Image (spheres, rainbow, N blue to C red):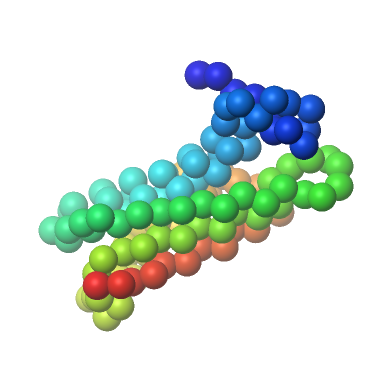
Amino acid sequence: MRTDAPLDNEGRGESFSPTDLAATSLGTCMLTIMGIAARRHGIDLGKTTVKVRKEMTPQPPRRIAKLTVVFTIPLPVDHPRRALLESAARSCPVHLSLHPEVVQDTRFEWVG
């Protein structure tokens, strides 16, 4: 896999940066664990999507400051397993492994 530093950090910006991959890992891990819980309980997550926005610190040392994770779930807001699914997402290993100084803002949009 090729990676590259972003343009604002002496890179060419031609590939994903390692911090992009960290952000992607968080979103895909959360969705995977949510999917496992859904399968165990016979829930069809349908076309659920996840988007992750990464914000870097403005000053050195350069690091991820905040990750905003937004799930769009095509199920009703009053779904009886809503708490279970949200809890499952937050129990993913990547979420639990990130440094406490990395702000993780997780949002669930129930649109069914």
